[in-house]
Amino acid sequence: MAHLSPDACLTACRPGLPCTSCADACPERAIRVTERKVDIDPAACSGCGRCATVCPTDAISLPAIPASDLYECSRVRRADNGAESVPCLGGLTATTLRDALAGGDVTLIDRGWCAACPVSDAQAAPWEGTMRAVNAEAEALGIAARVQVRRDPLASWRAGAAPRKRSDNPARRALFSRMAQAGQRVAATDPLAGLPAPVTTPGPRHRAAQLAALAQGAALPAILFPALSVAGHPRDLTALARLCPTGALGITESDDAVVLTFDAVACIACGDCTQSGALAPETAPQGPLDSPTTLITRPRATCTRCKARFSPRAQETTCDGCARDTELVALAHGLRRHAT
Image (cartoon, rainbow, N blue to C red; front, side):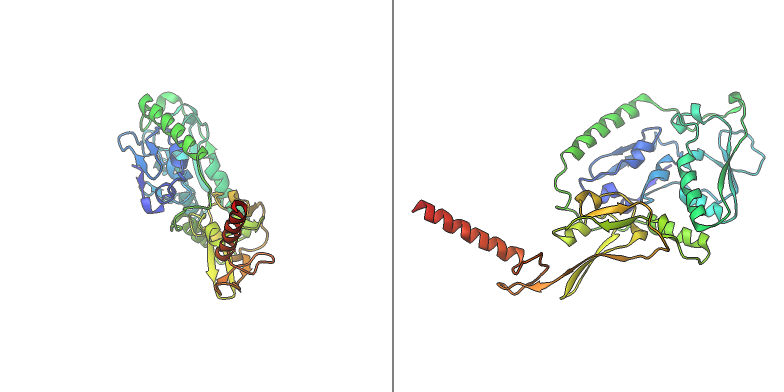
């Protein structure tokens, strides 16, 4: 059954910013997401793997599927074609398919049962999104191997039982859970305030290692990774960096400058940083991967009043604290003159 690693889960590590990718993808509605917790009901989980294919950080895992050049639905009785049998072809993760591509072309056998199967959630080709993404990676790397589908229909009466039939109650509970989460997201406060430190997640680094193995020493193209550009003038670079759940945004401080850096390998393109308006995504970065890169360099100066080092904006000579003190003194003086 599906297993969750809380240390790698965005919901568990980022209070107030729940990720619902796994719950949305689960055909059995066996996953319930609250503000800081993801619960997987083992009695309802079919082990299809659909949740693992959409988890951006690889926080959800299932029993390992061996790399193979041929994958078959487990509903096929007494398959004798040498294929690796899996609970759902739509549960094949990009990680599994990349491992398989190292040996050459990979074939998925489509028996024509998916659209009516409860595990596929009425999708005729539940593997399509993952297959397209992995093939795009292979094309960008310049390797010949591809994931392909071989349509070999069988009569529906020859299909074995699906791993589990969906029940109504879990679906109803999941519906109310998602409605509650939507209300929480609407009531969210300033995204730059009160966030915890970034957490380490295995997914992005593992992907980069797999791509490097497929590239066989060639430079990885930047188009396979997210890219950011500066779109605004953030007031607090440290708060902006803390928006990133995986640590892709980092801060380097010295007496002379504060530098905001970006590590594309660690980025999961969640969009948390771009919602601030200070950064914007680049759609088609060119050339080889160059990571980490410097996004913003802000020189530091000495406050003329308290002598502390700070990052000034245009024409500023005092730090924010001293500037606020000056404003408060001026306000108090004005109120006193008005009173007299």
